[in-house]
Image (cartoon, rainbow, N blue to C red):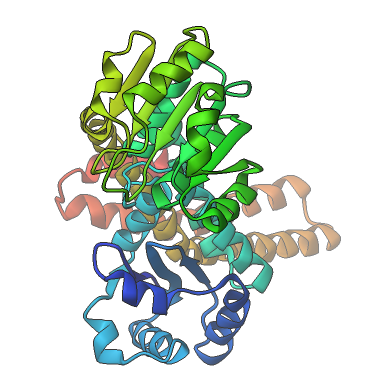
Length: 415
């Protein structure tokens, strides 16, 4: 029985196809039940995120083909159209792929931490559905252990590699704790939403959102318990902000030098940290000339991101070694399980010999024979019977003149 990893991700498929192949959370239990009932898969896990849809399962080559067909049918997609974007890994490659995914090495943003929780959630869903058996229990526990080691023993997640995260990281370096810092976010698009999420994760609670469309600002503000402003209110409320982060599609600057200068006077020249993530710029470049205003542009942050990405890539190289080692350890365990029948049969044979000779000795004692002679005979026969086959095998091994045969024999017989 082989282990397979089947799927698409941001490297192999456009977002239009990834959207069609995604599993909504409420679809996963039904899908797992179908995999178990229709395809007789005993182990199956579905991982579905915005950047990937993957199925991990155990089975034979024919079942792998059936899973591809099932996947197309479940989502009502053309099989040929789907196949050109799919990847299918088996055994060692599948194990390493799962570990790389869980550790964030296969993510769009190298080292991002969210994927680890998503893999755990997928595993828990499969446990509840009954599609996790001992093989995958061992596989996923080993995967979680390796991914955790990567996080704690390398710096894979230590440095910001997105401008949104870099902006928040800089803010935290300047202000320390963010729980009492007042933040004004200008815009309500994906970038500002990501900034708001990072700020919230870092403890910021005093957020305000200003946007040209009030409804969009309101929708974003609800997610983070933030205040809502219109762009027209920004000049009068700017002095309240310790941090200003802007990212809009405006063709003209929204925050000018005079506006910031007036706000600083109202703040009695208490410093203000401004980040302009927009292209074209939302904040006039001349703002950087003001003594108490600290303005960073997207170019400033990109240089930080580039440096940090280099650090992460170095950490990723360390992580790859750890993952390869972890995958090898799992494969060794798997190989031992495949040979477990041999060990069990050998132990059963030894147990049968022991019971046979024990019954014989008990009968002899019951017949009144000399106990010492009975015990001596049982010991001789037991040792001879148990040593016969291994002795022949060792003799054959030594006569074969195979390299390392002597060392292997020493290990086998504990010499």
